[in-house]
Structures are given as C-alpha cells and as structure tokens.
Picture 1 (cartoon, rainbow, N blue to C red):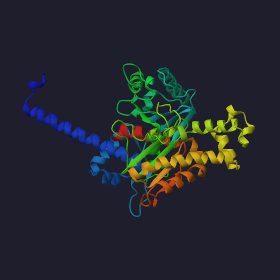
Picture 2 (tube, one colour):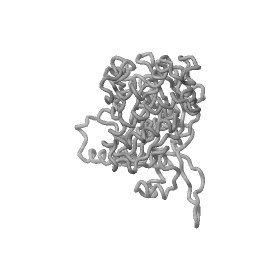
Picture 3 (tube, one colour):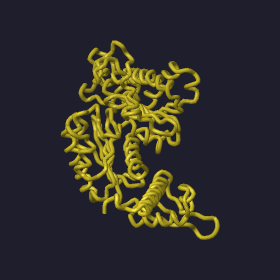
Picture 4 (cartoon, rainbow, N blue to C red):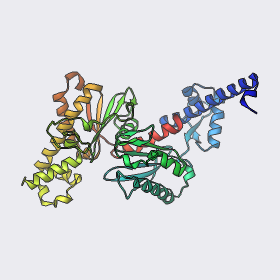
Length: 410
C-alpha cells in the first residue's frame, strides 16, 4: 500500500502511535538515567522523579526487567506498613568495554552498568599516528571479551579515550589524523567491524566527567580538571554543571597557548607553548640537560635513560633540591597558564590529574602560588587547588559515563 493511499483517519492513528512510542521511550530512558546516576529506587520514588503515574512506571519496569536492564534487589527501608521493592540496574548481562589509549601506556576494562570494574588489563600497544592501531584495537577487544568469558552480544557499547583534537560527533581525531581510514572515521570503521556503538572522547574531557561524577569535583557547577601528562597539558571544563566541549569538541587545549615567545619548538609546530614547559616529557628532558651540565642530584647516580617520573618524585620526597626545583618550575608555569582560564571561567576548584599529579604538593603548591600572584583577588578567594584522589580511574569512569549517557540518556 502506497503512503498516499492511506486515509486521513489512518494517518491520525499512526501519528498517535508515534507520539505514544516517543513518550514511552522517553520514560524508559528517564528510568535508566535515574537509576544510573542516582542509584536504587522504588516505584514511588521513580514515579516522582520522572513525573509519571504508578501504573506506567510499573509497566515499564516489568518491560525493562524482561529485557534484563533492571532487577529487583529486595525491600527498601520503611517506617510503617509494607516495605516497597527497590529496583537497580542489572549488574549482569549488559557490559561495556572502556579503552584508555595514550602515548606511553594503554589500558582496557570491562565495566557493568553499576560502574564496577569487572576486568582490567594493560594493552600491549600505545597511541600512534597510524591506521594500524585500528586492527590492534579490534584484536584487543576480541581478546578482552574472550579472557573475561562474555560474548560480544552482551556488550552495549565501547568507549575510547585518547589525547588529541577529537570531534565526538564525527568520531575523528584531528591530531592523530592517520588513525582514521581514508574514507571514514575510526569510530565508523570500528562500528562496521563489530556492529556495536563506539564513542570516542578526548582524554582530558573524560577525566573531568569522571571527577565531576565521582571525584573531588562531584556536584560542582563550575570546575576545572587539569591533565598534566606525558605528551602535554589539557584542561577539562565544567560550566553551569555541564562539560564544555566547544563547537567541534576541541575546548580545553590549554597546552597550546604561547607562554614563552622565544621558547622551544612544540610538536604542534608553534614555539613556546605551555606544553613545552609543563609536560612530563619536558620535565625529563630538562632533568637530563641539568645532569649533563653537571648539576648535583641523586638523579645523577642513575643511568639517564632509566630516569622516569616516579623516580623523580621519589628523590624529591627525599629532599633532592634539583628535583624539587624543577617540579616547582613546572607548577609555577602551569599556574600562570591556568590564571588565564580562571579569569575567563571563574571556577570554584581546580583538580590536578595526570602522571605529574603524583608529585602532590610539589606541583599543587606552586600552581596555587602562581594563581595567587597572577589572578585578581576576587577570582581566587574561594578557589581551591586539589590533587585528584581518583587518579587514572577518573578517565576510565568518565569515558564510561560518556558512553552510558549516549546510549541510555540521549
């Protein structure tokens, strides 16, 4: 039957069915969203939260339980009368894989809908600007599924975090451009390979999501997360309770503001970027230069090629003056760069993440001192500088939240 031959009355029925389906799907998503972000709920609580009726919520819960999205977990506490049943997202049957792909290390994990890490392992590859990484990711996913003993059909999606200028809508990484096949984005290639939804997000933006949901920035409306890692510096931004990504998803590239006119050449091609002064790689480079110049340090007793961030922090904690001074210099430069962002966005807190966050107060104290020096008084009076308590897990959890939001909330 052609569409033009349908009677007007039949069209009205289709329209009404469409509206009913849309409303139903919206309520399903609201239930899943509420249980994911706010925890276990009773029918009465869900009815109030999603502004629906008891019969509607009851019917939807039965439907979602049949589909194994939701389970009953027992009676809730009640002061009087019969105890109501609590409902929760099902910790079994539906899983996600989260890949944290970086320049110096990569990790993978399987999580359930209650954000529990069920399986975690280091990957045997790192981020490289080559299409070969797509096959490595595909092999890793198949191996992870096999190692944990689940099937691909039990996955609801895969989330990937990595550094670079990433457009989350198109799935392109514009910094590591060769990870994308010639005719499609890496996300499209992976989705076609696995028939699963894939979501790609910048590592720093994943970190601020994790901190804002589970870490020191939880519940804050305006907050930064500064990611001080090997390759450079990224700024995660939450404004008015929402992660700020910018028009193309590129917001937060603090590391590429120029802070030293006649400074070192940055990998981006410009000179004197903040990255050249504050990344973990720049710290190791400066330490090696100082030791070659004959500077006194406990680090001089170690082979230059074996010096890593953990060892630098260890000797700093032991009182090594060179290590302390260089960490201070990095924190000071970071604070100067952050003071620009503080004046622009007026955050209530800055959470320090990344490998250099392991230096603790050797990094956060000079950041705070620089902000005190370069920011107007009213901007810094209620601003706190904190070292992340989540560490690397902030990025994993943030990628998980980003994936779940796109699947059950959007």
